Length: 489
Ligand code: ADP
Ligand code: MG
Ligand code: ZN
Image (cartoon, rainbow, N blue to C red):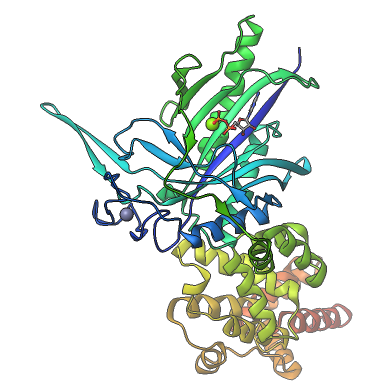
């Protein structure tokens, strides 16, 4: 039998507003801050306190929902999701259940197999839990509770089970990650757990429409774990089916070290959350006017930007894709073009995705931190375009500027790096090089044609790399050809 995988993802993204979802505590980086410095009676779950909805968090959630083409509900409700765990001081999480903020959206993804639409089931608001650190030593065992993260706004985005491979699931997650970053609602820093995934996986006969029982993989914190865990689950489920066993609904965890999943609870042990409407919060009413305002203020999203770059700057899809991955890189690129309107957009794109992104990967700097401004890069590229310096010199200059800052024009002038394009000067250097190597000239004339490249190298070296390579090639060929007709005596 031929199988196909059915995959739906639940994505949790922290909303990086200034304050928490239902109180005025600041949102701090929970991987850096001292424990429990951002806690008040509301997020500590004290009795008798009242939550208040953070308007900015609602706006952030609307941005994402609108970017995913969801319908925003004019009226949605907050519910209590009851469960006991030490990182959840109230004993319940405020979430949305029956009447979520938004529903029925879609996300377009590009995989090796082409473009695909994944439907979004719902997008709703909730609050994050605190962080537990379990300490285990020989003589004691205890857990530390840090509530800095408790009550931070959390957006849950639930897809329809539309993905058919681990790769599609990974690309969906990456695409969503990029959009959330573009919208400025989340830092996108996966290592800090600000975006987390849960994957629901089932298997069925290829082409069938039925939905079989699913296994839910909890708490996946990287694209890599997401993809690996799904691949593993698909394999497990196919093996089970082949053995004639049924896959039963269960929740599993992912073990990073062994790269296997382990069972956490079966369907029978599933939590009964006893959802009911949060009595301390009124219904969330959103007027059309506000929706329109948020929609109008959405930035251009990565997919649209890539399409525009291809069209407007005649870039190939791969390069456009690379440029738009980070909004700051795309902005940098367009700022270069604005600073140098006569620059070739393709050349500028090649430098940004080549030299510049190599440097950023190495140094860990982002575009905003570079010592070279868009105008500075434009100045350098214009010098190449106007034949004032060649590629090799330009790379060396850029490398120095990235380390020390300064201006390309000044550096080229100070170091005397200007390209030699004067035809007479170049002809003279070639004459000198040929005259200094009579043996090589003789072999060349004997038929060892590859020596013309060797002579090219000699001339470039003598010019300290600064000679215009096109002119050198042409003139060298002319002089060597001349010797063919009149060999030296
Ligand atoms: P729950 O809270 O039980 O996890 P949700 O509605 O939040 O329920 O999420 C269910 C997720 O599981 C959705 O992403 C949905 O697409 C996915 N899903 C539902 N049925 C299946 C199935 N048979 N196989 C794989 N994924 C499924
Ligand atoms: Mg779930
Ligand atoms: Zn608080």
